[in-house]
Length: 230
Image (tube, rainbow, N blue to C red):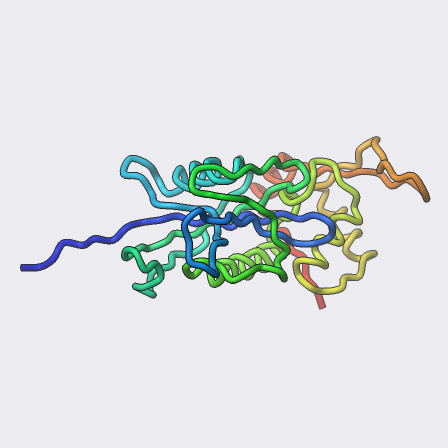
């Protein structure tokens, strides 16, 4: 007699944040984990009556207090049938982008702590979460060059230099700042505000805003966002 499947479906979320000129990922410290791998990506099992996206939103809110503004399905992980020693678990991974400067994180449910980790300082993670994170970084780097998702990592109003530094940091490449500025402004998707940076020394710089409505209008007309690096 054929055995019934006993496979569980989970969701895991990579939450990227950008602060102090660095790319960060949000991790939780599990209350229950192996001695050397307590840290993990936020996530958990999907309930019988919810969709995958609803499960991600719920788990993130329960474990980290994060409310999402951008979320996209990344990849499904399940080829390693022993990725979770407790049960056969297939994980559907998502990645999200947030403004880390305007986010109140708080651990709850099965999370002992929640903390931002710089990408190059990620500890060994539970399950296959290091692999999931690597996939997420690859996707972020690629998508940053053909969709303006970088604005989701910045405050609503930002310095143009912050946008330049974000691209340099995440893509790990130097840019021609003059040409970068010229190209971005030529798209017409940035608004120059009447506000200035609150710096105490030097010449104040104007703040900019991303005009998402204008971007969507351009997309409907066949516009293609593209940032290339030599």
